[in-house]
Image (cartoon, rainbow, N blue to C red; front, top):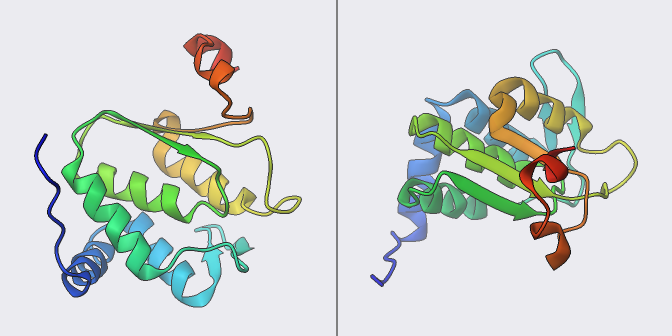
Length: 149
């Protein structure tokens, strides 16, 4: 297995900010990470509160997505959807067939993250799925149809 070589943080961040000028979901994510508020195109707002990643963390996630050729990514926990937005926006820019699953039956607080989730569903359709079930081992044994129900 080849060892993963990552660019320096400054280069990661620069590449991510450049991507934000080309990809609408990444632009929205960068704005949300800077302001603490995710704005849906229809004007609704989600306040990210303390549950958000840094621009540097988002840049690293985006870099890793550019290096991954797998058609499926899985995340445990939605939080406020920042990492999901980065993953989906980056993979979409690469024009690769992919699907991103998130196992998370809970919300950070009632209703939070709903605006971001609505945006991801609208923007990415069936390439994004939030599965409202826990991520315990038995969940992985379910058939695809059972998981998606």
